[in-house]
Image 1 (cartoon, rainbow, N blue to C red):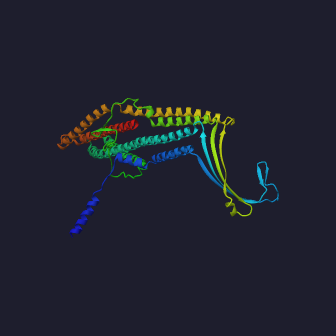
Image 2 (tube, rainbow, N blue to C red):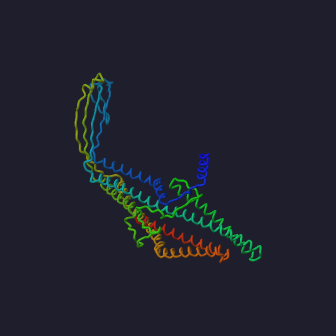
Image 3 (cartoon, rainbow, N blue to C red):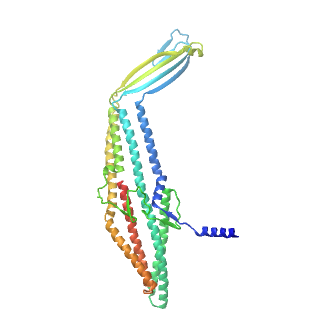
Length: 446
């Protein structure tokens, strides 16, 4: 019997304890970073660049190759001549089996630094891909904080809206009774009914907005979120130890900065374009040096065996026959102005990259200045906000005391409380917006 009662109690307890899902900014950001396809692609691009460096380094080593030849030649003319040649064709006048094994080596002796430029391009390409990863990470942080703040604001407004809806429904019931009694005009009751209807419609809009925002966050984190019983923490409720952000009473403080605080040369966009420009200059240098002679060393070592009657006997005659070393040089004289056209294209591409670099830098600096301007008076806003929050809290407490002591009529109490709840949400909205701006400034300053 005791076991049965205990089982029932456990079942009742498990059904009554429904844990609400809590959304935390740091966890959302971590999961977004872990599951970001753009970051995964950027990391793969870095690995690809490492392979490109190995490929460029291979030109500093000699190329070794081996070849094996086996042939059977039959003379159909019974001529006495062993070899006849016609143009580029060689006709053997004998019947025999032949085997040949060759070992070859090629090495680039001197190319006026072309190999070095190719290696330089490969290394800069790797650095460029690493910077691209940093840029993707920075953009992801800004995108996540925007989505998270949208969800946070929608969730807080929905909670505020629900509380206001309950208050205004009570007000509507009171206005309805007063209208029936003839104490107030019917239009006042209808205005209150419209206010309740607007709150209901706004609640539906907020639910849809919150669902859509959570779906956008889910695309980044690959987690699913249920709007029911969802709790969303403030952005800086649980800061990480390694965050470059100073928190005091869950309020971010930013050191005084200037609008030109961002160093242009530290921006990922600038560094990425600058590396691309340097790669183009290296490519242009290669094109110029291709007009100069290149020197290449080749070497061959031959083994040869032959027999007139039997294939296997060719191996008995198999022995080394020749060894050669050659140094060859190639000097291009005329290529139909192809190299000149390639150099002109490279020079124009450099000018284009410089223009695109300056455009991207100005875009980022303008974005930074915009965020900075919105947050430049953060300290003053924070002081005013803290004072306002304190006044609103004190007034709410006073209203509760007056209502409990029946020193204020119910309609006045509900109207005053409704206004104070709306004001409290607006103050919280300013706080969240400033927190988001401060976070963005720190991300841009990293």
